[in-house]
Image 1 (cartoon, rainbow, N blue to C red):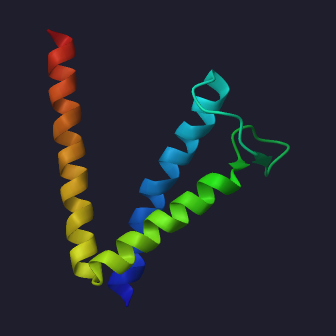
Image 2 (image 1 turned 180 degrees about the horizontal axis):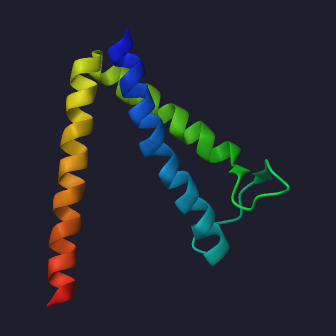
Image 3 (image 1 turned 180 degrees about the vertical axis):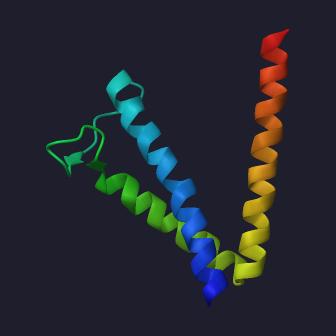
Length: 97
């Protein structure tokens, strides 16, 4: 159970980053306007987007139910992080030439 909780914490961090990107895409006009609820009047960027929250919930539930094991889920997360680092490195090398 502790492994599943740890995997859920990793996925929480990795799934909130796209939510911030969605807010930026809305501001730039790349996505249609969505309902955005500001959760803090003192800090800009503290927002809740119900549509994104529902999408993240569905994605996480699909992953958890699809892998059925915290070990498999953790391994898949490690592979995803490694591949992301590899693709980023390849892109940076191609841009630096």
